[in-house]
Image 1 (cartoon, helix red, strand yellow):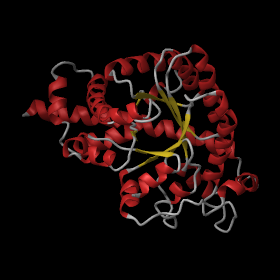
Image 2 (cartoon, helix red, strand yellow; image 1 turned 30 degrees about the horizontal axis):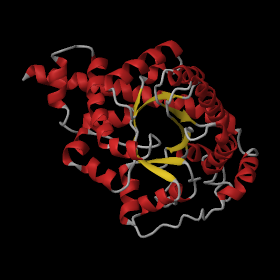
Image 3 (cartoon, one colour; image 1 turned 60 degrees about the vertical axis):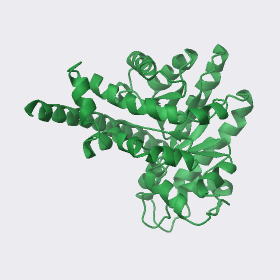
Image 4 (cartoon, helix red, strand yellow; image 1 turned 90 degrees about the vertical axis):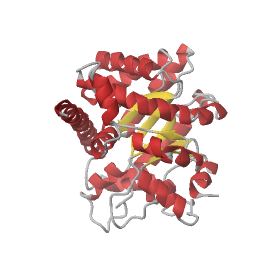
Length: 347
């Protein structure tokens, strides 16, 4: 049994935090699903890297650019093709899990993060464009995004609420999902709670000998998970899973599996980049016994951090910066598409 399946036996799904036409065409995506990966997430940064680093999309860009000159429409068409294929590859997982797993996520334009009406409009458009039951529309967890989430769930659209850094933003997200269940729609949802970006920001404000060094993100995660467990009984079988996002290590003194073995597992998802997944698949058995005792220490770690910084201020800044980074990647991918179109015209 490989480490991916070992983690799955402990109640956690592993999703791939990457997608590209190249992975699809080479069969690598199908292979990694066969190894135990049960979901896929995407974001503007992932598509920006995929489109700019290969020529795999050139023929599709040429074809779609003959139908429309709108760069955003071209990008959505390109992205949706990859998402459709991924959804089909995950359809068996989706069906066997009775809709509890096997999802692929596509994000709305991040420039709409603080616009409720346009977020709803774009989410509906993308939902119809992909037209797959195991699609999740990804929406940033701003106040307007969480408001939009409620209405979209009520419409039966699956939602991945992303860029959640603070406990309060997670609480609002989970409460919104519970409220949406009154509509009796069978929409599904995950709450993407970010990890390593928090540790990176927090560790810059801590001394390396502080007891909570490298532990603020995981302690913050356990705080959210505690609330999830308290509320789970209100959600019956269809509950909103906590999804651990940004779980590749950023510090050189941490092992690649650091955020795989020290986060809550039961009824959660962990999204990992290809490099971390490859590490898990090629490494010997990893220890899943929470070696840092984060679960027992998380309240103390959060209390200790108060002498160094205000965690709410830190997570607020991370949300703003996260949206900005996604916006920049979205603009960059449109510019890259435009460059490729110009080269095609010059041929």
